Length: 382
Image (cartoon, rainbow, N blue to C red; front, side, top):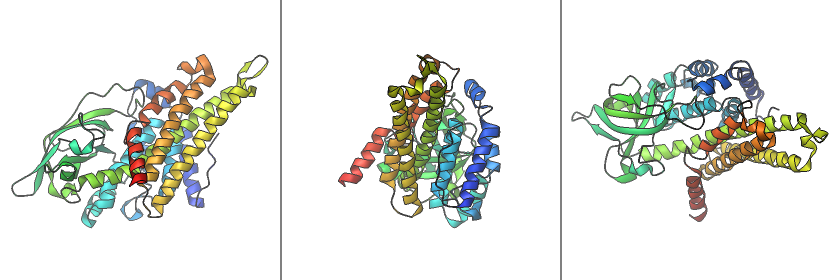
């Protein structure tokens, strides 16, 4: 059943209603076949873009929806409850726009954001590398400035990049000095830039409509005006962006868990054993109750963090808590949902085995859950 929502305005309720209608009419009929085939849902992203759902948390003057994060994240959750790959792609796109919107100059916002937020473009976020994941400061991709200062040449390889090969721009972090984490800078690299190439699509457990590939820059030249922030500010930009990005993943994980719970509850009411519906057995009924508690707690955690963000207050710890709570819950709820269906849950006749595969990666990307525990503990202990 649809999640109960307490929304701040009538307009935000209309936005949720629109999202649910698009999910029902356009996403649900194709998700199973598309995920089996691993087809990139280009038309779906274009549809969401035309509906304004890819630019919700950004200012209206630049083409955004001017929605609070509290509302934007609930839209992401609604999409994830139907098609997780698309919800993750939408969250990643919002992440790619964040550096320009938050750290860009007035000129950069005027020049870059309208296209980024216009609904026809999709971004990719190039931070991780083959040997640099959680340890961002050890990245080796380098941006070398030309003698006249007008361009940078990027050289190196990024790994685990969503939307790679389909994105219109790549928000890329590269080393501009050897000063560890203080030597990184941020660049917006257009997809048509010469010197960009892509590896094979990774053969992942789940999210097969979210192509993950390596992105290689081989003397890819970008104008100096595509650098966001000052040289050496890249680490601060990346970490600030990830605080918001983690909330997107928390919301998506919550939507995935809600979908699994709904499937399990419906099955428990219909499946009969020993003369009655299996949901009438206390052991299974209590399992479903625990699943509901986990989903509700996940939603509460990301909404609390979102409201802190919307109020202009620090929310790094709350974002880490939300990401940790929601993704661990998604893994447990999807696993328990498979158990409710028994042998049927282990088959591809039901989507629960896909949900379970999709849940696992939420504990890994946007900072592993071990990194979230590190962030939380450091905040607690100073």
